[in-house]
Length: 309
Picture: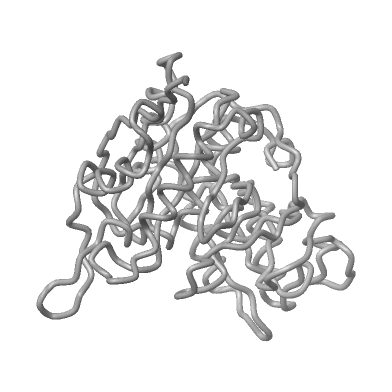
């Protein structure tokens, strides 16, 4: 029987949290503690698990610099040809962002699997151990090669591209807005994201332009608009957005609608088609959290956003 080898990179999140005396969750569990009970579920001689603890963060505190570290850690793990795959444990709040970043830079056929939990480590019905076990199994499976990064959570196996956290408490935490087998573009060379400033601005009926004017004057690197419908914004907001585009700041149009593609279909000042004519790019099935990461990668690498999406 061949022994598989998987590297588990731990970053914190609910899966590594315990409850303090005030009932507050804090990431206190080490990578070794997290993996030990799961490793015991594999038959002797079938699975070798190497744990690399990167950090212990609530993923709402993750920065682009932290994403850079995860990308580097994944690439370092895959430098060893004896490794079959990599699992990254991560908080659910921003898992979709880190996963799509790793996927976009991922040039190796071996799988990288992201997982976590909705219940803490010390919960009597903790979902983390099963999620981690299934993730290790999939990371070691040859059938998971050549398909990029995955999120394995609540018995679901989802491509990282298009994934979104859809429920705050359900054990099936993630869904996808993308196709079942999304097309992956050619991976781009790794570039640091830490100094890239991309903001998300939400559009709503009657939204003004003041936030856009502020960001234009601040000279941010890029803006993702969480638009209405298939990429539409209010008239005043649109005038501000046009000024942003004329200032040379790239703009990507996403949507606040959970499902469906963002398509530049409507005319009028704030219609998606009008904004596309001014240079705004639709994000297709990517919602604003992942669109922000993809726009940051586009800026950092000099690749056109459309080719990355």
